[in-house]
Image (tube, rainbow, N blue to C red):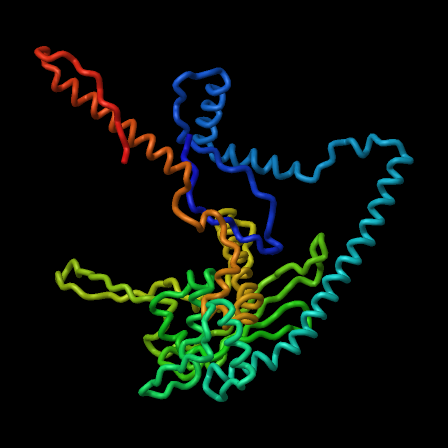
Length: 401
C-alpha cells in the first residue's frame, strides 16, 4: 500500500465557475503484492493492471461516471401524482428562498461598500504616516501603546526611543514586511522581487459599480519599471451561485512597463552553440519565464475543453489567483499594521499539515523500528561470536535512554 503524501496542502476552495465534482482518482499501478492473497485482492490487482495498461479505458469509465451525476434514479417519477405535486410545490418554495439569498448577498455587498467608505479615511491616515507625510497624533500613539502594554506587560510609555544618527522618514519597507508575514503572499515573493517591492508605498482597493473589486498597488520611483500605479481587477458573474453567493469570473491585470533588462518575470539562460563547419562556438541567450510576485498581474485565463490536463492545471491556478486577491482584500489591507508586526499570524488558522513534517504516530513507529533493528543487530552479533567453544548466552535487554 502506497504511503500517504505528507504535508500536502488542501486545494483552495475558491468559488469559480470552473469548479466541478472531482473525477475518480487515477488507479495506481504500484500496488504491492499481498503476503496472503485472497480472491478479492487478486481481482483488485487484476483490475488495476488492466486500467494501468489502458488509460483510455479509465478515461471512458470516468466519463460514464460523470454523466451519471444528477441523473434521476426513477424514484421521483414513480411517485403518485399528488405526491409529485407536493414535490413541485417545494421546488417553488426553494426558488423563493434562492431569490432571498441573492437579495441577502446584494445587501451584504452594499453594507460592505458603506463601511468601506468609512474605512477609507483611516487608510489614508495610515498611508500618510507610513510614507512620512505626517506623524500620528498623541491620542493615536497612546491608544497603540495601551495595546502593547496589555500584550507585553511592560510600561512602554516610560521607555524612550533610541536616538538615531540618521533621521528616518515614515516606516521603511512597511508593505514588503507586511506581505512577507502573510503566508500566501510570502510564498510568491522571491529574493529578486524584494528590490522592487521595497518601493511599494501603498496597497488599497476599490469596489466596482458591478460586483467586483480592484486592487491598487502604488510605487515610488524605482529602477525596475516606470509604472506608478499597477492594478488588478476581479470580476464576478452576473448570475449568483446556488447559495446566492457571487461567482468569480475572471481577473485582468495592468501591463508592467519594465525598464531595459529589469523584467523580474523572466530570466536569461545562456547556452553554447558550436558551428559544425567552422567549429567556432558562440553564446546564445534565451529569455524564459521564471517565478515572481509580479506574475500576479498576469492572471491565468479560463481553460478550454480541448485539453483536460491543461484545463485542470489552469483551474487550480484560477482558484489560487482568486484566493490571493481575497487575502489582500480581506486580510492584508484592513490589518496591514498587524501583518507588519506579525501579530496577525496568531489569528491565522493553520492546517495540521503546517504544524510539522511528522506526527507522534510516525515518531512511535520509527522508535519501534529502531528498537527492533537494535535487537536484530544484537542477535546477529552474538551468533557471530558463538564459535561453538562458549555456551550461547541469552541476549541482554535493550534499554533506551
